[in-house]
Structures are given as C-alpha cells and as structure tokens.
Length: 361
Image (cartoon, rainbow, N blue to C red; front, side, top):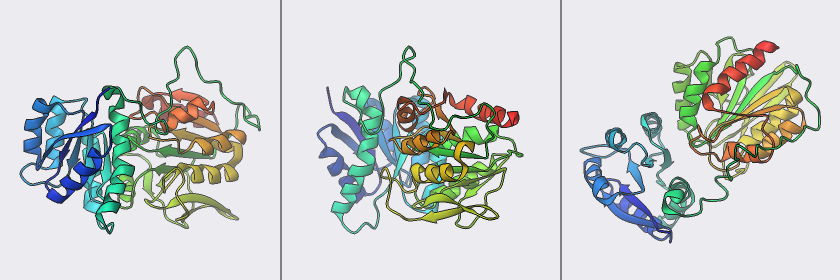
C-alpha cells in the first residue's frame, strides 16, 4: 500500500499552498509537486508519474483547457480534476473541460471567510474524489459511502417486488432522472436519443452548484430535440420538456387542479447535496404513483436510493446505468445492490429502452 501521488497545478501561490497543505495532511495522499501553469505540469507528468492532477482552469501561458487537451492525447487514463471558480464563466469553462475529458471538477473555496474554512471545503469535496478515482491504483480502500461493491455477473441482484404490483401495460406519465459525477457527458449522450414529441415531461437532478445548472441546461437543449431548461418555481410541467434542478435548491413537484408544477426550496441538504435526488423522487412518487419511470445515471454516493425505494413501493419502474459505462458506479450501484433496479443497462441503451416503453402505451 502506498500514498496517492498528486500533482497540483495552479498559478496562484496562495491556492497552491492551501491545497498542498490540506491534501498533505491526509495520511493517504502525497502532493509530489506543484506547477504554476500547464506547460510546467506537462513537463513534470512523465518525470513524476502522478496518480492524479488537480488542474486550475484560468492560468497564464497555458491554461487548464489547453493543458487538459494536451494531457488527454498522451495520458488517456490519468484522472484530472478541474479546479473551477463558482461563476458563470467558471461554469462554462468547466462544462467545456468535462466535454474534453476531465474526470471531474470541484469549485474553488473562494470568499469563505478564512483559510481554515477553505481547507475544510477541500477536505470535504476534493479529498473524497481523489480517493475515489485513485484508491484502487494505490492499493487503498475506496470510500465505502461513495462506491458499492460490484455485482458479479453470476450473482445478479434480486429485485424487490413493489408493494403495489405494476400492471404489465402500466401507463407512464413522467420521467424522473438522478445523476452526479460524470453526469453532464452522460446526459449529453442520453437526451439526443429522445424524440421531440416525447409524450411525458422530464425532471432531472444533476448535482451541480449555481450558474452551472443553467449553463448545463442550455448546452443540453442546444443538442437535443427536447426543450431543456433550468427549473423555476411555478412552471407547469408539459410533455416534451425537461427541467434540471437549479444549483443550491431542491426541486420538487406540486399538484394543483390544473396540472403539476415545479417548486424549489433551500431546505437542508440530503445526502450532503442540494439539489438532491431523493426529495424530487419522493414528490414524483407521491403525485404519480405507479406511473413513474425513473433513471439513475452515473454518480458518487447513494443519493436517489431512498427515492427509488419509494418509487418501487408504489409500483413505479427503475432503470440504472451499468457499472461499465458509469464514470462512478455509486448512485446506480447502491440502487442495484438494494434490489430496486428493474433493469441495469449501458448508457447507450437507456434512451431507446425508454422510447420503446413509451411507444407501447
């Protein structure tokens, strides 16, 4: 067993110091070097052979996106976590980085009041991701709360029977989706497989901060037949439209006499997330009962498992992404191991499966 070797790339001396000190305080992590820009980082990678890079986006001489593009040509399997500012510009750059092959991202702990608070944010957000992507390589145990044990092909999960049996031709009235790490790219592949005349509305929770969710919705909408937008309180659900929960707000549904509407709130985090999947899935299940089709895509942790449990109890249908095509088989894996998945499918089969189910009705 050895420590995880990290190369920290950031042009700001203060940020490099905070990140290095915080990561170095973990007994399983070793910051082997730092670099002030991408050009220096690319020179150090073949010499130091790091297990993972943390890569700032805004840097002089060679910025994070340029560095990422070059690194991916040479090191396809090297985990790279982008260090992004919590701004609209930072969100746009982060989404671009993910499309270029970044493994994941964290937001910089700016304006948090003190160095100690900044360091705690790094411990809470960056360190778990470093361990998740590198533990196997370093011979360490992966965080138990992030990734479930794999399901062997010879031991498929036993699916729990719902409290209310689902009729074979049960009508579907809504598609509810939960996703996290690896989600932007998964959604970018998934949404174009749905037709413009999709006969149901779509509601999505993607774990992302403010600014990022609006930009994600715009980017997905530009490449999808559906109208995809960031959810706003008071909007009425319509077939052929999709809404993504806004960053830092839970999104739930409310039934009124003339239809179903979106609501948002800032109630406490669930599963360390806001937005979280479970509140949305609970509200969807309460309103639609067995007429729910839910999907859990790639993601870290187990948000969505309790919501899927309620959906199954009321006779709804649950699909999860398989381990092989997931960036992290956390969220879908926990649902599968709990026996709540009606089907476990690769990413490219989920859209066609949904379309086929809706055509049958």
